[in-house]
Amino acid sequence: MLEPGDKIPAFDLPDQSGQARKLKDLVGKKGLVLYIYPRDNTSGCTQEAREFQENLEHFEKMGYGVAGLSKDSVRSHAGFAEKHGLEFPLLSDPERTLIEPLGGWAERKMAGRTGMGVVRTTLVLDKSGKTLKVYPKVRAKSHAAKVLVDLGEK
Image 1: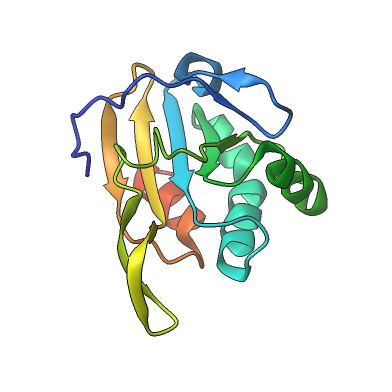
Image 2: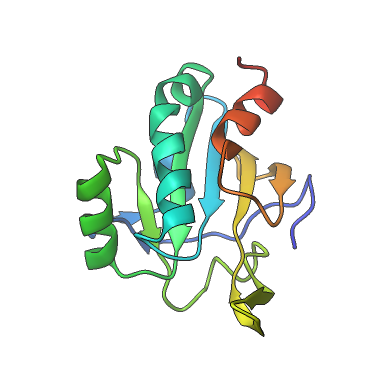
């Protein structure tokens, strides 16, 4: 798990259109809100994505880009983004090359079973990729609004 002050590893991952994206492609004037989520088109992940979309203008006004990150395929992300009108990048990381070092892969309990899986996590990064804040084990509902409050909006 990254801590505030840690720099995230360099990455080059495709978004929902298949375009390769690096950190520099995603940051706003101040930085990036990068949220890791388990799976496209599940109830919690859909709620979280919609809330980030509803608040996208506020994040951008504050100088932050927004991007989602999951193990889902480019094709899955494309359908998810289109279905829910998502206007920010969704990065595909099926091999967990970025998810794991960011602390988004851990043991979790789901439906009475314990196993390894993607854990909902959000990072606020500065323009250089330095971690400013980490939100581990996030609850989807109202999370985007909480991040905005912490960044000084609302």
